[in-house]
Length: 452
Image (cartoon, rainbow, N blue to C red; front, side, top):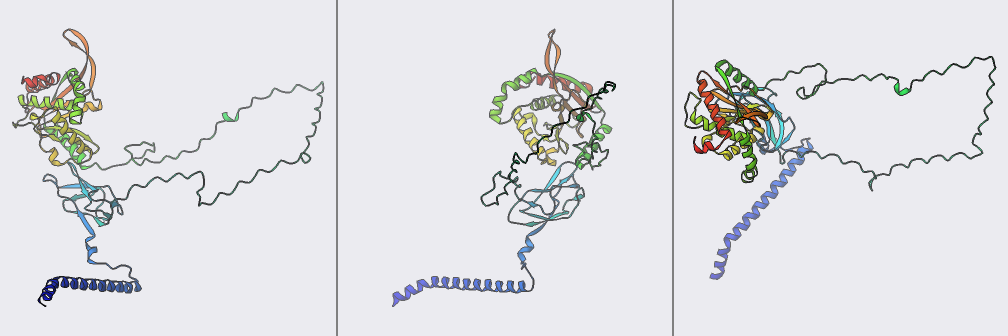
């Protein structure tokens, strides 16, 4: 008896758990039955859906993300429209500020249900932009091109009607017999000779009236000219407005003066050619002339500072052209970098610029700027200072020119370089000495290792 009580006592928790699960299942079945009955009642009354509190969380209003401290507002640029299916983190809009473009991504997979602003509107941080409704899937895949119809009909398709057979030729008896032509009359002796035949103009040579051509204005005036003599006014984005204002400010404020020099690029080109394969194998990127000039500029800046504020570091801004305008991201602490470090940093900044992901922090600071117009084939030019900096170095194209070397005329790949500086702060002697040191470091990089 005691053993039976002990066994029953040990099984009590299991029995209680089993009874609890049975009660929960029974309640679940009752709830499901009640929902079905309510659904049928609402369907009879013309109601198609039952909205629950979960629907309140399926839609979300997305606001303008916070701006950096130096930016207060921006202009909206649409990349999607109402009804578009978007994926999580897909850029729905962009807020173009005077320094960079701030992307506005989708918080989840969904459909754009409402857009609360207009394209080109000025918005501030925290302002509502659009409403997105959450869905299970992301953006729809690109539609596949329609298959070319097969020449033969499919097995299940209807066969095309047969072409009518050609009519058989008539029998020989029914064919019309050619009649003999009457003999031509004999010309009389007194009749005058016939006039010579007039030349007949061939039909192909007769000019035909050209059909009237209807000219349609181009869809994009910046890429096509159709000759309709129409105009299209496009609002300049904030970044270009800021660039224009800063360039004009630089001309109005700085006493800009430019000095020139030329550099023999033979050693740099030979160094690049000799080490290109090994450089790519080790670092995965090619070595260019920008890293050579950036390192040479940092080396010259340590000896000839061209700023009124003296710093114990060298941050060099590199001008990068993007579809939205010119940006100048900064490579920091160049004085402690080698060519590979500079190339890796420039590759990362260039990739961010191409994707439109350059931030204000990437462009903040900078003690000196290098602009490479040589990539576009420029022979010579005068760069404009990037405020609040006091000087800028302009690189140009490499062209073969005859020069005198040790009394002999030789042909060498030469580059003109230009240094524009604020003459209020920098004397001509300092500018010329700086440019000469850059020239020496590029033509013979060993002097940087020797500390000369």
